[in-house]
Image (cartoon, rainbow over all chains, first blue to last red; front, side):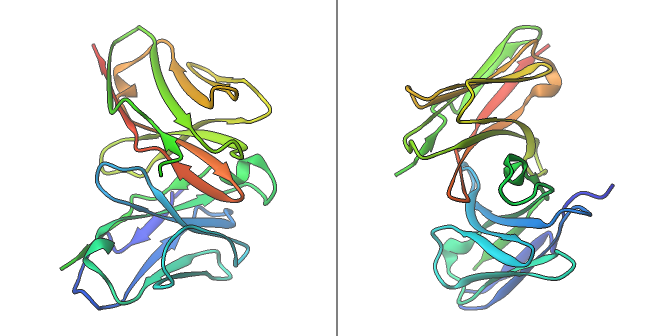
Length: 117
Length: 110
């Protein structure tokens, strides 16, 4: 079975631009979460979506937005890019139903490396 | 203010011995805890979890212990194998949000 896939793998953008990152969850997984990871730190939670609805939001500015499509794939959008947005963006999916402990047992993709210059 | 801390950035253990990875947290509202393992150039992989109503969960060579009064979580790997060499992250859940520690790099020497 295919794991979580993310595209693109690497991306270079200029400050002030907009970026869209894409994620396809494991088949059958209805929940998708997005994380930002900078070097030497753990992943920081950005969003969680379940059945196309936002179920959790981390402490990120409104420049960050996301959505989940009917096929459970997801996009993360970042507007007005700042140098500090340079990071590895991880997508994770989960097979657990909302309200169950397995909802939080996540399977991560390899990430998209975003560099803002 | 970091709510989940892994105070040891690295740990080196001999093959066959026990590896103990530690994690401390400050938010008493966390109700679920997880450990993930990460190899280079890959995303983290779910390893084992524990609910706040339990104090121990075991899965093969991996055991997670939770001490709520001390707000302390630990992962025991017995026996350690060279393939266990990776970065280990602990994570805690509250109100639908996941908070990760910064990771501990485990090296298991043959």
